[in-house]
Image 1 (tube, rainbow, N blue to C red):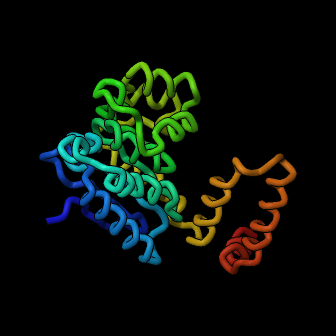
Image 2 (cartoon, one colour):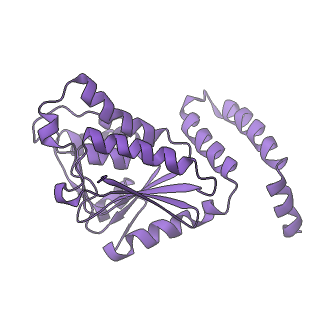
Amino acid sequence: MGVIDTDCVEGIGVVTLNDPARRNAITVDLADELADALTHLEGIPSVRAVVVTGAGSAFCAGADRGALIHADEQVLRRIYEAFLLVRNFRLPTVAAVNGPAVGAGFNLALACDVRIAAESAVFDARFIQIPIHPGGGHTWMLNEVVGPQAAAAVTLFGAAVDGARAKELGLAWSCVPDSDLLPASFDFCRTITRAPRALAVQVKSTLRSSAQFRDHAQAMEHELREQLTSVRRPEFREQFKVGR
């Protein structure tokens, strides 16, 4: 029996880590299934965005320690590839963080474009306490999202962050009651489900490329090309007719 469930709800793909007995801990098998699930959802033309969440009381308790203690470079790289796949996924992604997101589970949430936290969510790096050096690109992703001081507090000093504090730090877009987490995550995706899929893919690509632009002028040149492509699409022209 697999440990990843997939579903599609009105244009929103849903990936659920479903190993609650182990608090959805990441193993090589789970990482491989996650890759397969994302590939499957990307192949469904109606899917515009993907929500990643966990079954039970935890989003993801991190890497399975039994596997981690015997891990070699090849095993770690296979797990890391799952984070890169989520990070580089063409469609927009939302982490619906229910309960603790620890270590590698924190990485999985960081790899998504947006995080929506339940009130029970806890973002906990935990690396320094185990003790083990952070992995999976954790320091880079966290620093990018919250800046150097908060990244140091969480990763170096071991500060855990609850859902409400995560929203204050910009680590989460919003914090909602646990019972509202999935409905709120789906509602958050509604606008993008009505947009052309190609446009969603291209806007995400531009956002991810923006750090490479030298200056405002280079960003404008890039966006000029993409915007011209957009205005030539039939979806835009039809919307313009409706707007008139």
